[in-house]
Length: 222
Ligand code: E4P
Picture: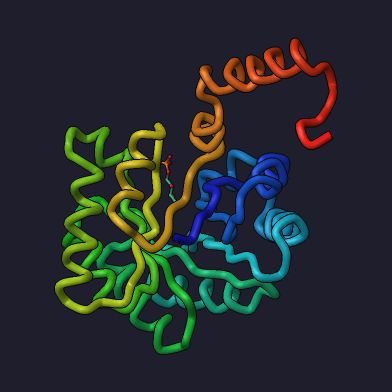
């Protein structure tokens, strides 16, 4: 699975880059606005941390086909491995078809149903981003929609990869990863929760206490 962080926070990217083989980061206009940094600054900083092979999924902000395609060309020309995120709307799908004619890597975003995702795959999107938590928040089942979308892709021999997005808890991440999808992007607070089970540190501390009580600071192979 390709594992991404859904953030533009360079300190958090650095923090998790030490313990995880991150494929890259995903951003959207809201994430960049929250960080208050321009795309150039974020990508340059992230590339320095993650190295030259990192992949960056970054979203267009234009609203017409022509403008989206022009924006995608500019993003594609950046000196990084950029995948252009395009909302999977009627206009977005038309833009995706043109971007694929130009050989641009595309992720279809803002996917709220399996069939919407499948249409984006037919338009040629390389990645599909269903919004698990936002779907859950609407009273529907985000995980079931990801499962349905993967089934549609498999049944119709589509090569597009699901990059599952929008998570608020570790259960959603675990359930989605059980489906064998191609990629996932996890926000940093949920990433932190995965490593913060309150039982873990006391268990580790107990090992130290027991060992030191018997052997002091000697290592076991001495
Ligand atoms: C992908 O990057 C999506 O834009 C993002 O995961 C949405 O997440 P949210 O629902 O937490 O805003």
